[in-house]
Every structure is written in structure tokens, then in C-alpha cells.
Image 1 (cartoon, helix red, strand yellow):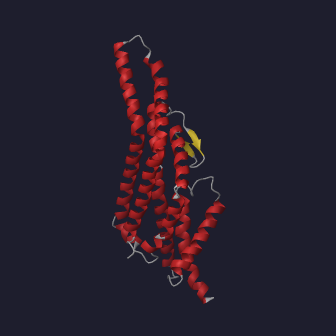
Image 2 (cartoon, helix red, strand yellow):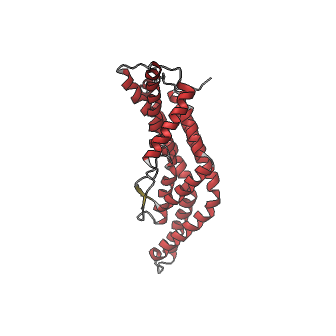
Length: 262
């Protein structure tokens, strides 16, 4: 009984971090993933982590335990949110493309996120998820939360990092990196459509009898879809760079909150 009373608070803290991670991490946090699966995998990973890192650890069981729970929940949410933030660069890039191609008003319901999403963004996101599983990205996410206990043990000084602004600075940089990746992914199609607009502008000036608005919309759709078709073979490289940026950002967050294990 004494062993159980010592081990249960430690395991509960680990469960709080891991469950919070699965609530916000890409792929695992999708609405079409059953809640029972999230709870089950959280409990299984918690058992694995406890057997590896938590057997000989002890935590206070007074009122400060509530602060420890809040800290672990925030760490799990931050880890998952960092990965999810960069993953949304795919849909942000799709929004940029749809605004140029003319699909901006044709947003559809996305069952993965429960919100309306751009057509091109949904297509790219489907490619990204398939390649994410193909490249074993979900294994790297599990590695990230499991080995976070080497970087950020249960005795970490999370609140000090939160107070000195280093975590907020990291999140601001992560948002900027997400937008930069979105611009890079959308740039080829956006530039091509911009040049198409320039060409239509010259056509309107040189031949005013042409109805540019009637010609422009289908032309931009054809140009956009043709370039998107040409870019599909490059999705493997592009999304590979995106996934690498996701895992590097998670590593930076671990280094910001804790420290690299020796």
C-alpha cells in the first residue's frame, strides 16, 4: 500500500502531461479519433514512461501537488500545440492559394478540425497526413512526449521559464515560422496566378473589347490546377521539410523549458 501511495501521484502527473499532449498533437487530436482511444493510448504510454523514468521518483502530496498538475498539463499542451501550429501551415498555404485562384468562397467543413477549411488546404492536408504516417511521423511524436521526461523531469522549473518570457518568445517565433512555411509552400502557385493577373491586365489595356472578367476566372482556375498538378511530385520533399521543422521546434521547446540531457 505504501508503494502504491508513492507511485500513484507520480503516474498521475505523467498521465496529465501525456493526455494533454494527445489532446493537441496533430493526427492524434483529430475529432474523428475516438476519445476512448486517446485515453487508452495515454494510459499505455504513461505505464511505459513510469516503468522507465518514474519508479524511484517521489513528489509532494500537499497542496503544491495542484501546481504540479497544472504544470504538467501546460507542458503537454505546449508540446502538442507546437507540433499542431506548424502543421496548420499546410492549410494556411491552401488559404493563400484559394484567395488567388478564386476558391476563397468555397470553403468546406473539415471533420479533422471541426471548422471550415479551404479546398486546396484540405487536399494538401490529406497529402500531408498520408505522408506523415508513411514517414513514421507519429512515431517521432510518441518519441517526443516519452523522451520529454529526460529533458523536462518532474522536478523542472517550468514556472520560472514561464515568468521570464522565454516560452512566450518561443511561441511568437513558432507562429512566425508557421507563416513563413505557409508562404513558401504557396509561393509557386501564388506567383504564377499573380503573373496571370498581370497578363490579364495587359490584355485589358491592349484589347478592351475582351471581357477580362469572363475570361480571367476560368483561366486562373485552369492555371492554378495545372501548376498544382505539376507540384504534386514535390509534395514528398516539401512535407518532409515541414515535418523536420515540426520536430526541431519540439526539440527547441524542450530545450527552452528544460535542458538537454547529458
